Length: 434
Image (tube, rainbow, N blue to C red; front, side, top):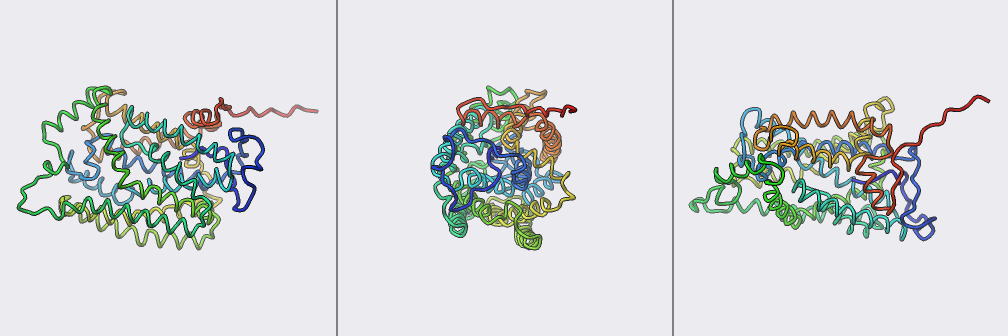
């Protein structure tokens, strides 16, 4: 998630530093639209749309149903299929792409600059953190902006590392976070069978009365749901201790892939095809095996670590394969019209992400009609996401045909620069006859 209007071409390693840049930190002029990397916009658009297919579960159900599906609502028939498709093709894959794009965005914006670009970057991260805190507590506990802002303060200091070192350190952090997270779920496997502890006792499910009270608090409106949301927000912040390493690690890899030209469609078609086959060839069977096993054993708590672990590892390969597929699409001139709406959605990723939250929270607490929290089954959630995708893919290019930025991109940009930025696109003057 990055405001890319300013930054089209990369700053080459060993190039001019921020000391030599004209003007001050908050006065950089935008790069021409023709200098943009379309591949970054398209991939960011794909990522921001894809994460909603996973997030919708946390918008419409008890939060633990995300990691332990039996915790809320039906998980059989079409709903089991919906869970399996989401788990195999979406869960962790698109947030991985989103995180990698954030890392690439830092490289794109700051590069090797020392003063000017860094000052602007830190201003952007401070405001992103402010957005994140408001988003997390006023709207939805599943916010990623807070984590991204914190990570943004950290990863910028490592941008001078070589691509190889960034990948090595990134994988190390990802592995460490994986051991912590999978180990946490693995505790369920070592609980003695004669302990007599239920999923309620272990905190994975609520008692029926407590679950009914939670659903009622959301259906009673936004204000009554804030306590439950705040409690979940606290849990989300705590989970950064387990998952933060993966976020930063993936951002490191995104920075490396940007340096290597992978994310800017500079590799050959053959290289991207090989990456696609390798990524999906390894990741898809691994994730599918774990997901199918989870459905077959009824999501047994003692086996929860299995599909968590296979997805944790497999999602990295699948995200790499997805990215390669997008790069192949970006290298095909005849697919220009296909790319256009996704590129627009990517340029408005911040707005689209926040709009998804506003729409989903509004639907869950009754802003736009009946409150749907605890009412929409998983199969219906998939249908809702498809509708949101269609709307955002239609609205994004139309909006950008009139305005320079999405509304939240414009606000973030204005706050970061410390002055109101131009919003409307300049009108093209018709040439007068001589």
